[in-house]
Figure 1 (spheres, rainbow, N blue to C red):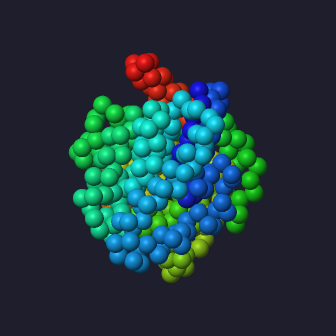
Figure 2 (figure 1 turned 90 degrees about the vertical axis):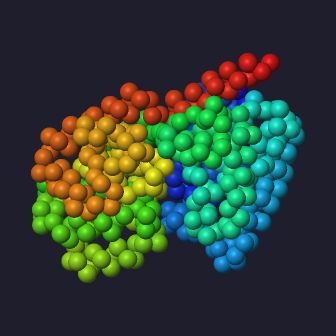
Figure 3 (figure 1 turned 120 degrees about the vertical axis):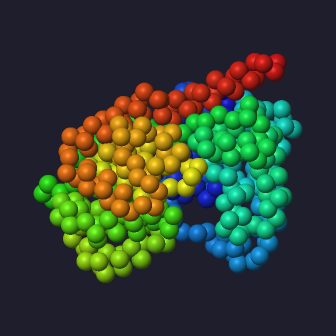
Length: 393
């Protein structure tokens, strides 16, 4: 099939990984994919230190109250031009689009050309932008999101929590398919091989210390301060474990200050922002992957990758996380925001190597059994589009 992959993102960090992974998966099934975007993700990864930066245009929008309400719908116009240009000499079997707030370009173009459109929704952006104060016309924003979803042929979401949120906003349930984030098994195998050859910076895995790691961007809602608090309060963690933080972001200065103030320089290490392949290689050296916090509707990509790597996982006990793991068998969960429970889970894993091994192996098998693979997701999407096209001939 000929697929047009359309998006309007900055193509950074997890967004870029997701886009590139799905395009690659479609192509590995033999489909032809053309990416249509102002900033194509497949041109290559940005320098990691730039990926956590807020784009200048977004900073300007946030500084001008109400400006975003006008900007986002108008931003559809360049995308309409891109879609028209891409379709001038080539017909497509369907459009796959990563949802962007206020972007009517894809659904309108698909309706005009009578082509199915699969809309991938990773966040309830109308809610997020309203809570951040970026948009003021909240009712219009919700109408916009609901309308775009209902105009799509199929809506793919990353969690059942997000599915229920969209249904509550008026999106038709029959349109929605839940496909959690996945992994590329070839990339996982390469990460293990590369990780075995890494010379760890600052010798963070020296001796028999247990490596407890996090990979991602350091933002307030990731709860990394709680992780450092566990090391501050636990002699066991300070003596027998090491905390490795891979990434960068707006809170790194604060975290470095806490490390110094709490005298944790010997057991807390910053690996810096790394390209995806290198970050995966570092994660392959962890004994424990920790997700200190997560929003209520996401599907943490790094958590899924850690499971595929066979790592023991510690994560907050909330519905979207329980969609991914069987508590006690595939991961240890703690009450969200409860630092004492997080510390207790980490201490259990430091003291019990068999528990780490059993949790990691069960998590790895779960990824394979449930087919949380980009290849499987691409196959599912194509089959559903074919079924829809066959039913509407």
